[in-house]
Length: 220
Image (cartoon, rainbow, N blue to C red; front, side):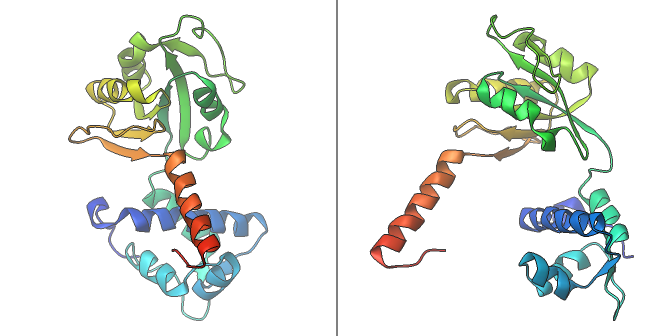
C-alpha cells in the first residue's frame, strides 16, 4: 500500500464517495463475497468504475490485477481512512422532536459514533430519556459534558434563531466538528468544520426538478 494521503489533499466529494463504497463493501461482506473488481462494484451499485479506481488510488494500491479487491481488507482500510476505526462521542443540542429522533437514529449510535447526551434549556424536557437511553441534560452543562465525555462532534437541532448561539457555545467548548440541522446560515469559527443538512433546500431542489419536468426541460 502507498503512503497515507494528507486529509487536506482529499476533497469532500471523494470522502463522500468513500462512504458509499464502504456501504457497498459492508453489504458484499454480509453476503459472504470475498473479492470484487471495480467494474463489478460499479455495475452492481450504479457507480463509476474509473472514479472508484481514481478515488482508491489516493490512498494506495489495494487491488490485484485479474483478481480485484479483497472485500474485507478494503473495507477495513476505508474504515481507517474515514477515521471511524475509533468511537467519536457526540452531543445533540436541542431535545425537540428532531433532536430526540436523531438520538434514536441507529446510524448515530453505531460504527464509530456514540451520542452521549442531549441538551436543552426547556425545563420541561430535562430528565427525559430517548428510546435509545440518551438523557436530556441542562444546556448550561454543555461545556462540562464536552470536557468529561471527550466529545468530538456537536449536532445542532434547535430553531434557526438559536443556532448561532449553540454553534458558538460548541466552538468555545473545544468542539471542532459540527453537524447543523438548523435552517440557518452560520457565522463560522476558524478551526471548526460545519456540515449543514437543510431539508428545505433539498425539497426546493426537487421542486425545481419537477418544474422542469412539467415545462419540458431537463435539470441536473
